[in-house]
Length: 343
Image (cartoon, rainbow, N blue to C red; front, side, top):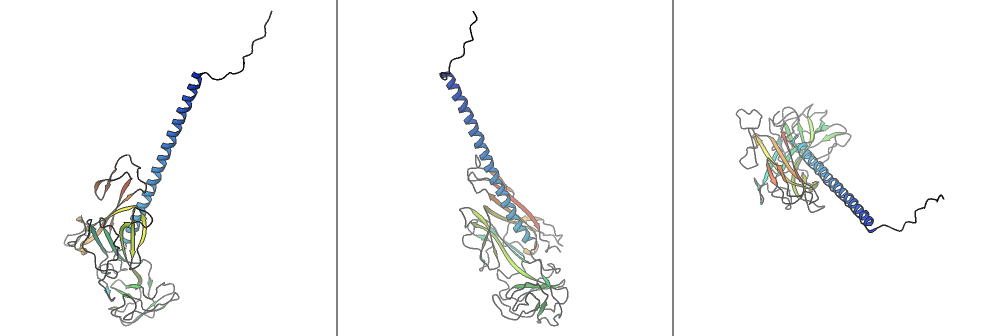
């Protein structure tokens, strides 16, 4: 007799061994998935912080370098002759345009040399970081037009689109000389007369005499005094790079910039060969007329802590530095030739 094949019975469940094997496999898969996710998340977090660090460092250094390259700019006059300065308080912080660059070394409790009495850097600025002041003319000035002055006290005439306002501190320069003064009347956007009479607003003109009558090919440009320093951020608990322009309120530029360091490149050759013999920290002993370049270094940290597994050693300002926390840090350095000193 032929028997029909016996069909399997209904599933009654898993054995204990099968259940434990399935649970073990599931647990291993969960652990692997969680580990991969955690590592991917940590890697993304580190890369994101490093990207912001890199961007912040480059931005901060670019801002300082851009102004340094224009320090002491006096049109085609170069730096051979100091400008005539008819401003009141011509030796004050904001108006001493005969000195294109000044740096102050932060020793921890004070700056060296001592800043001027009217120095605008607020009390909260880090004295463990340097301060650098740059005096420069804007690169897009206007050339005076006819009628040209016949006397050194005569007003100047500017063309349309000059953008000069009453109270602006200005420079007029040609290839022979330069003069610093304050506009006491505005020529207007359509062009017209630019006066530089005695008086005016702060600081005002001590004299209306620009020493010479400037003719064609004489440029008028707005002057600026710009100071960079580090101080606590107004948005968080970290440090930032700050800037003061002229006598305006301080402005925060880049977060997480911890330290700013400046070194003077000094040319001590006689006659000068316009090449730095050495780089030195700012001090009262440095002859500013011999400074032909600057080396600027900034250290930037990540906003987030606990990114490193141990305190990082990083290179900054020519030496290794050991961090005091688990943030990531990087040093950025640029050496800038003061081209208006070497023309």
